[in-house]
Image 1 (cartoon, rainbow, N blue to C red):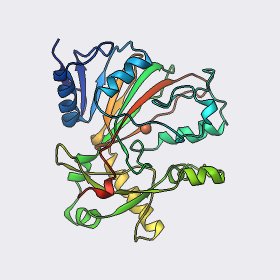
Image 2: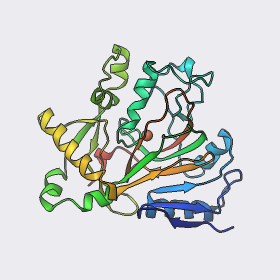
Image 3: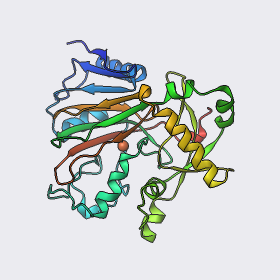
Length: 293
Ligand SMILES: [Fe+2]
């Protein structure tokens, strides 16, 4: 069966037919998916009744996996999933929803801020693949914003001003934004900031985009409040509704997005209901500071 992709909603989201993740991909299918990601940046695959192993195999057929080690407040003994997965659920290792005031939950809901996955790592994520295993009765959408279009719409003066800016990214900056500041010394060490360009160029399409994320908290050579206002203004601009696709989840959906071209955020849902989402992630090509904008 040939791979078909049709646009859903805005120009950067596509729905894929003809892929069954329970079996190995052909090289033609791999090429079609990469080409689809270059064109759309967000691809939706419905009705994927897959195991974790099948999700992992599908992910590995597209590139090198990024491991999730030490990126949350779960201790290694509390992991519900192997480190080949980022556990984006609200569940402890017994599959029970975290208590409302559990600090692991309060840290994790920082993903309701607009962000790009792993922008707090020196080599940030390329694609994220999120599979819906259990979903809440309401809410819990994921929204995506398309950064090349947001960049293109900036005026020439702003483009020139931001062209070579370098930001510091850390999960501590995003959590601080929502009043979560009680980090241990060990966590502060583990979440040390990394540097990322503010404007990046996609290696395959050649398009420039804004590399924004709520993890960005400082800009080199700029006073902090001024940097925060610039980042806030750019984020407000880039997340206007014309640049946004909101995905309403169905069980079995696997949504794949390109973190180099998009930001995303989770939306709220009832705290006591399980939301079991499992993310595999592909590593990016290298540090963005090493890339020419
Ligand atoms: Fe995320």
